[in-house]
Every structure is written in structure tokens, then in C-alpha cells.
Length: 394
Image (cartoon, rainbow, N blue to C red; front, side):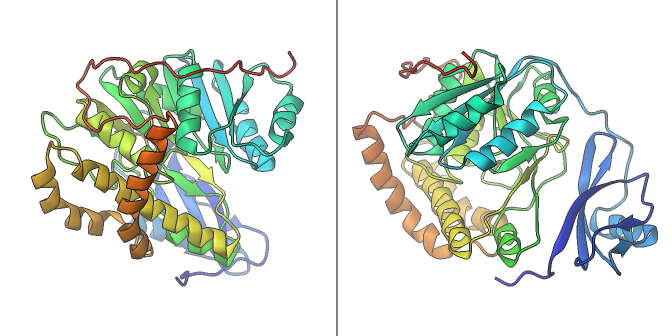
């Protein structure tokens, strides 16, 4: 994988304010999120000359890379109480950056649940304690895996809306209110938003960025009425680093599949939401920034894990009776249109075997492996064991 550009400055520009941009020396390109008020229109890449991008060049980039800017959209926001679940594993520095970005937002009623899964020591607990913020709770979980951690947070949450992000992200200040705003539509049971690069300074960061699906900036409502076909598309495959659910619906569906790894448990959950007759919204205005891995081996491992996770989703669908024949006709084209060009195909082949093995292990250990098709209004799953939460400062 060879990135097209060298070190790239990452930032934001308002579509109505394309005055000259100047950044620190050393960058020959800039990737800019173009916004209109609170709405995100898309990203552009512009060349820099001595750290400067002129207004004409940026306006032309908007025209060519985003297209005409139509009538402005009114972005919905809400102060509805919201819980943000942050799974973390042995990364206290990144976690603090994430949590601080959530707390710095403009939502007045946000609670953060840090779920420390498979901890090796007390560093994460001590880091959360040091925040001394009554909005932040620490939960320790001996199980390893983001899916199990999300389930733990989903059970512990007391608000009607539960959002999820990861310990390597920074959320926009308006993120939480815009996430809550998506649920002003009573039909919406889940939502996703764009995940954008936080830094593109290093080769490894740019390679990691190539391996991720492109962010989508068109507002959508995804629904599937009465059919069990896999909606395997860019518009639905959201990421656990930027998604939210109605807590009661998510619990009724059984939570996240703990046999699926990165790139699988979140995508499968969204597929299950739609197959259950629910609506998933994609809200471009609710974006987060993701800090890519900076180690080459870690970049490769994460790309392979995401590919295997997606293959596991397809395997799970193939193992379910509804829609199997139709899915077999649709999967090749869906995969071609969905996967980034650089996603490892070998992991797509090994993914089904990994999922079958992990599914057996999860079931033997008492983990959640919910069925794909759950009727709307289905029975609430058996409640998971909830350990006492640790409230910082208590």
C-alpha cells in the first residue's frame, strides 16, 4: 500500500470562509473537513505551497471533490440524557484524550462509562480516578474484547440512548447533542456517523487510513421491511467508534455478538437492527476523529482483523436460514463495492473459520452470541452480571 501523498495536515474549513489557509511548515498537502455551520459536507485534499492553500484552490477542490453545495440542512440536536460507553484495553493515555473530548462537548447531560476489559494493572482505573469527574464511571471487566465491553456498558447504562466510541478517538464538541438529535425521529433505533483521520503525518497513519472505509457524508435512513437480505453497504457498515442505539431495542436484540472481532461485531449489530425491522440513521454532522496506529505491524494486524470480522458477519448470515439463497447471489458484488481496495483478502478467507471457532468459545464461556434474526418486540435477553461500578471520587 503506497499513500498518494506525503505528510498531510488535517483540519476543518467552513464552506463560506475559504480564505487563505496557512499551516506549519513540512506539509505539502492538507485534508480538510468542509462544514456548513454544524453540518459536514465532505472532505477535500488540497496542495500547499510553503504551508499555504489559497482560497481559489480550496473553492475549486470543493467543486471537484464534493460537488455543488445545495440548500443548507438543519441539523437536529438534542439535550436528551446520553450515556457514552468507551471500551478500553491497556491504553490509558488514549482513553483520557477520548473521555476529555466527550466531557468538553456541549451536551449538558452526558454520562461516560469506561469499560476496562482484560486489564493487566490498575493504570486505567487510576487515570479515570484522576479525572475526578462525577460524570465518569469506571467498570472493570475480565473478559477480553470490545463487544463484551460494549455489552457490559449497555447493561449498566441508565439512559434511553447509549452511544459508543473507542479509546483512540476524539469527538467533535457538538457530537453528543447531534447523536441525541438523530433519535428525535421516533422511527430511528440506531445511528452512525463519520470516522475521520485525526493525523496523517506518518506513512503508517496514511497506510492505516487507506485500509478504512471512506467516510460517508450524505444523511440516510436505512430500513429493510420484511426481508432478510444482508444490507452490506457503505451506508450501513458503521463503526463502533461512532454509533449509538436505543438501549431498550439493543437489549431486546441481545446486544453485540462477542464471537465477532473488530469490524464485525458493530457491523453485524447494525445488520441485525435492520433485519429486526428497525431504522438506522447516518448523521454526517456527528463526526469523530480517529488516531490511526503508528506501528506498521499493528496497522497490518488491524486491517486483517477488520477483514476477518467482516467475513465473520457474512458467515453468520449464511448460517441463518432467512435470505441465504438471495445472499449468495448478492455477496460478491456487495463485497466488491464495500471493501477498501487495500483490505487483506486472505483474512476474508480465514474469517469464517475464525468466527466459527470464536463462536464456540464464546458460548462455552457464557458470552453473548445473539441470533441474527430477532423479531421486533422480541424477548429481552437474560440480564448479564453487572459488577459494581467505580465512581471516581467516591
